[in-house]
Length: 207
Length: 276
Image 1: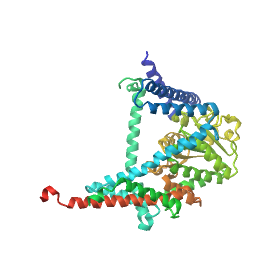
Image 2: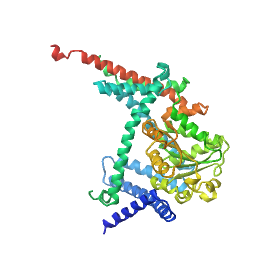
Image 3: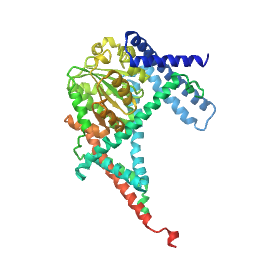
Image 4: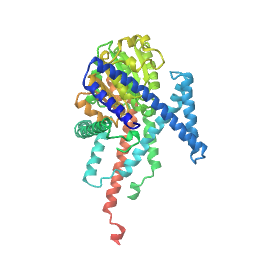
């Protein structure tokens, strides 16, 4: 029963959502609305569970003198300060939580992201070599798109933006659509496996 | 020739740093060529009747603000200029609602808009798929209160924005797979028209949805934002950023060419073993 009940719940929830997606009616809409409201509540509790788990893991590291315990301490302090300030003083504009976010977290995240520009430039210089015909085609395509997507491109050659647009809209979209369809089929088959109880890894069991 | 292939990374980093700083200090004011999808984005917003209610998801992390914030700012200015009512929300828990609050308040103030009447920030709710599907039946069932804790039934705008049937349009700004969920769950199921502003790396994938008509227009990265600013007759953050991006692209291409010259030269040179 311990493993059968979650499978039954997953089956009923999955079937309900499929029926609600493809059909409409007062009863179906009402039940689906209720189920979706429950899901947001469950997702909220899942967040709490995540916080509890992360605190437990890092507290254990501190208590057992793990070599990287300093990072665990930083994480727990940040979690307490950010979480505490939000719970105690609110999360709206002008609050302590908002100031901490705007003045510390957002600049740090932007800094991490902007460092990518340096790595990309360095990696492109070292790895982008025309070793054979295929890599030469890739290199040429990348150069056309990079030049065609910047304002200076049109001054280098007037047709570059049009060439870049064609590459983006025709070959690139064709490949992307193949990937999207493949991923969607994979997701649909995975969902079906979960609904039918074949896939049970979410219960901590093999499929 | 070996030295051409192994330029010290500190030299590279210094040149990149200089390429970013120079156009920020002395803007080049280069015009950005307009793409059809950015024009379609602009035209789609222009076609919404004044007074309509627009859903505005701020689905981006603070790390991509240089790309996404200019789109969000330009999008809000366009909406408020056309007297559209904006219902903001975020499916990104960390930072999304705070950024939404800041942008809605600051851009709203530029146009004399009033919170609760002209715009609302619903904030964040965990479980994005349930949020997107649940709002089809009732926004208040998913968001009983707004980001500030005010009950929705006390906000005049939310008396008009009850579910997707009462919304005219969705203007997505996103740096993650949420843009796909808006298309797959909301457009496909409920037919709500939408446009999207996404980061440059996401743009090739999102162009597929332009072909199928699932999104009406697309802004791709800082370039898309700069095009949108130009269409609005403004020159703001994205237009300034494009100058730096131009120089960086040229620098990277220059280094790729340099590296390949060194590579070709080293292949033509006989190896010491064979020569000896």
